[in-house]
Amino acid sequence: MAKIHYKIVQHDGGWAYKLNDVFSEPFATHDAAFAAAKRVVTEQHIPGDTTQIEYQDADGVWRTEVAEGDDRPDGDVSG
Image (tube, rainbow, N blue to C red; front, top):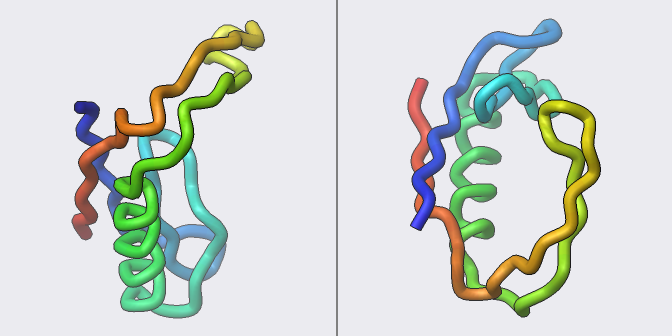
């Protein structure tokens, strides 16, 4: 199971949660950003349907693969 870590940071005149180099939308307060990140972690952990997904990798190449519905990441929030 993958482990992901969200971090709360100042961003764009407010606060955001960040995963690697990707920021969320800005929130007015640190607490609001933290609550939103906790909600995302909870929702990402819920099993879903096995489905085919498409995404663009770091090199700009589009990839297609099967995402297993029960292969959900384990996450946490810091900051």
